[in-house]
Image (cartoon, rainbow, N blue to C red; front, side, top):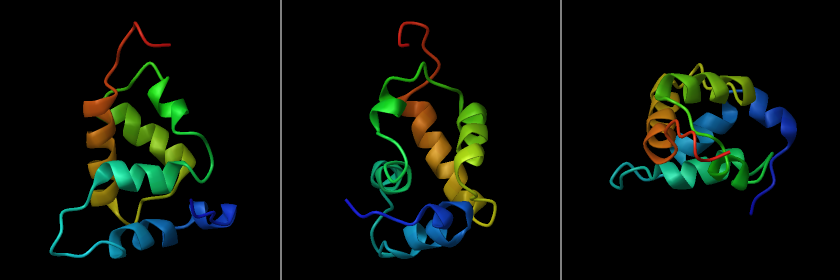
Length: 93
């Protein structure tokens, strides 16, 4: 696992790294992007153990942790993936 300096997460640089690391001929794997982006600061179990969120709430939560304002399509793609994989669910907590 690659470790990134914490300051990198407060800038659009990481988002651009994630977008530019994949070949345009291959589809971007949001699960891999989530792993790269989130695991630098916290365990992916935090996501798996969450009670889940709607896409709008995932977007908001992502916005608290990383600045993806310069890449809204990436933010939308990640939140769409997270909402599909971890939707609101009262049985997980």
